[in-house]
Image: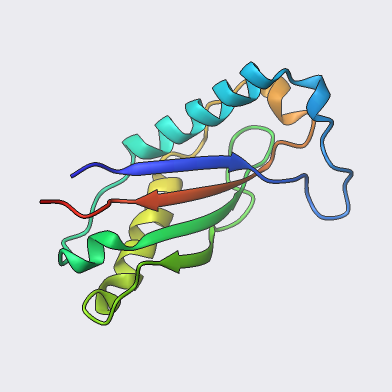
Length: 131
């Protein structure tokens, strides 16, 4: 079983200007995203679910403060791959993703990366179908 955690930087907080991406060179952004995803991935604990439930992909919106603490609870944006066989486990898959984020708080990222408004991330958790 392999956990795939994709992470992307979304936008600055509501009401704030969008971050100036030109301030952070693309390799730094890629490094930031990879570092954050790796931290959260280490904190994930897979629930006991059916094979069908392993196809569920959970997408969260997560907001952090400048010190890497959560600014609020992660929000489930969507779940894909929910079949009739897997639907009884959808909540467990969402909870496992949320708990991974909570366990990994504070997120350890360079403080200068937050300055431009890097406080929101979309995280995608996917176990994929295991054999």
